[in-house]
Image (cartoon, rainbow, N blue to C red; front, side, top):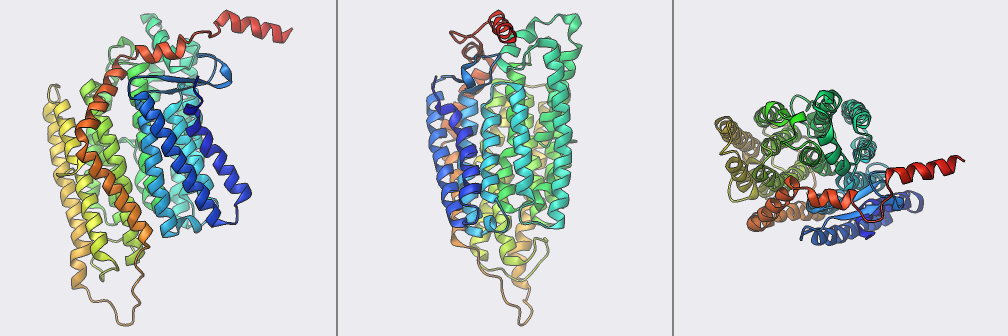
Length: 520
C-alpha cells in the first residue's frame, strides 16, 4: 500500500497550521512555505497521475482498515487528473495573489488557501460518500474565510448568501446519506455499486429518494439552474484570486455527478433511470442559456465572468447528462478548459480593477497597461466563448459530436450554437467598452492615473493562457486520455475489485467479533 496517495490531503493540512503558528506575522515566510507546498503538491499529483495513466487503481486504507468498514482514498485516472488540475491552478492563483498583494490585505490568507486545497483534494480522492460530505464541509469553511478576506459589507453579504445556500446543500446531503445507509448499510461507493443492484424492485423508494437528493446536492455545488443563484454575487464579490480558485469548485460538483452516477447509480440501473435524461439534461441546457444571456446583460466585468462560469458549467453538464463514454470524455476535456479559462478571466478582471477604479462596463479614461491587459482579455474571451483556435472551440465540437446520435440532438445543437453567438456578443461588447471606447474619453485634469499592475500578476495570467494553448496543441492526446478514462468509468470492475476485494480485509463477522471482545 503506497502512502503517496494521502499526501495531497496531508501536505496542505500540515502546511496550514505551520503557517498560522510559526509565521503568523511574517508574510514573506508565509508566501515561501505556501508556494513550496503547492509546488510539492504538483510534483506529487504528477506522480500519481503518471501511476494511474496505465489503468492502475491505487487504494489507501486509513488505519489499515479495509473497505467498506474503514476510510479509503482511491486514486484512478479521473481522481488523479482532477488533483493535478487543482494543484496547477493553485500555483498560478497563488502567484497572482502574491504579485497583486491580495494575500496581505487580510489575515490568514495562506493558511485558508492550504485548507481549501486540502478539501478539494480530499473530495477528489475519497472513496466513500460520508467523507465526500466531510471534505465538502472543509471546502465550505475555508472558502467562506477566503471569500470575506479583506472585508467589506458587499463581500460579507455575498459570503453569508454563499454559506446559506451551501448549508442547504449540506443538509440535503445528510438526508441522502441517511437514506442510503438505511437501505444498504454502507456508504463506501464501490461497495454501494454492488449492493444497490441487489435491492428488490419493491423496496427501492429509499434509494430513489437518496439518488435524487444527491443529484440536487451536486447540482448546487455545480451551480446548475435553478440552483445557481448563489454564484454570481459570491464569485463577483470574492477577491480575484479566490474567485479564480473557485473555478475548480464547481467542477467538484461535476466530478461527484460523474463518479456517483457512473459507479453507484449507472445509466443501466433500473432503479434510477430517467434522472440524467429527464431532469439533468434540460437543466443543463437552461444553465448554458442563462449563463450566456447573463454575459450579454452584465453591467460589471466581474459579474460577466461569473455568468460565463455558469454557462461553461451548463456546457459541461450537457455532455455529462448524455451519460455515454463519448459524452463523459468530452465533458472531462471541457472541464480542464473551462477551469483554466474561468480562472484566467477572474484574474484579468482584477487587472482591470487595479488600473480603472471600478469594473462598470461604461467608457472611462484609458488605463495603465491597457495594451497588455487588452491582449490577455482577448485571449481569455476567445477561450471562454469557444472560438478557434483555442481549446474552447475544440471542446464544444467534442460536445456537439457526442450529442449527434441522441434524440435531443436538435435542441442541444441549437442551444449550444445560439449561446455561443450570445457569448461572443457579450465579450465583444465588454472588450470594446473597456479598451476601445476608452480612447475617446479624456481623463479629468489633475487626476493621478492608477499604477500599472505588478509584473508577477501578468506572469500568472500569462501562465494560465499558456496552459490553455498547451491544452489546444495536445488536444488529441488529452482527449484520447479522457476517452480511456470514460471507458473505465463505464466498466468500473477494476475500481470495485481494488476497493472491496482487497486481500486480507476483515469480513463483517470478524468486525462484529472484534467489537464484542472490546465490549467484554
